[in-house]
Image (cartoon, rainbow, N blue to C red; front, top):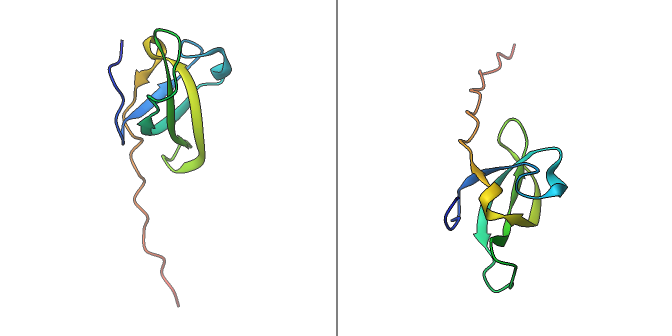
Amino acid sequence: MIGTMTAGDVVYLTAAASVQFLRPIVVRVIRELPERHTYHGWVWIEGYQLNAAGDAIARRELYVRRAGVRMQALPAKRRRRPVRVG
């Protein structure tokens, strides 16, 4: 089971975290929301949903089962090549 999530953690959310994630998503955590009381083993998190390139595409508040949250490495950014002009 994952411990407290902190700013910058990247997590992979599947149906194990909540039925709303039948299509898994990757989220960069902003913070946990401890002021929201939940059932034992569940937590509210605030974060940015990431696309395949690792770019933030949506800010989300998510209710997840802590035991279903998986840590994820950030996708490697592709290096852009300079464009030749002229």
